[in-house]
Length: 180
Image (cartoon, rainbow, N blue to C red; front, side, top):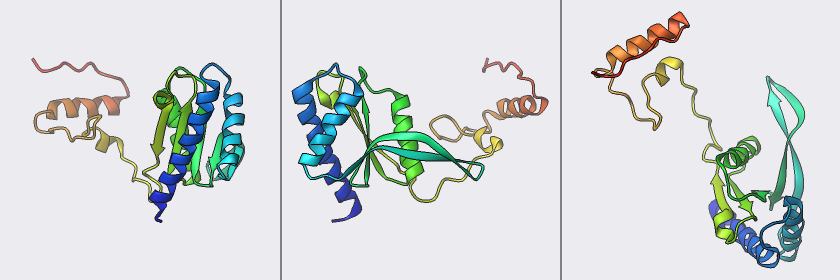
């Protein structure tokens, strides 16, 4: 069994445990209650896990104590973040992705139990940058890239690009007029 298959098998088992907890408790409780019951189900399913795992932050070469606390790490492979919110927000995904990057793990699950149907509260998050990190862009590089990553047509927008450079050099934002 390869790594991806193993992680898929573990996430499937985790989701099965979460469904069992949601079936018995439903929405409306605190995260701590769901965590306790979910960990009971992990034990019943024969899954190894750690609760409230501390994750330090490294800042300028220094290890700074406990900056984060991950809810549950299952089979030393999958990070599970438990929520009791109406839905999952982008900040929850960013939080889990940060945990994945800082631990070097590939897969995490966000589970919000405060939903009528559990599938609406499930999100699988994959750390696609577990290997080499992408090289940082300079401000000049990013001036020629749109939000979606598509290059800007520099001939068509040469006036815009030169105004952006002038604005960046002078330190003062200059108003930019759109095409007439």
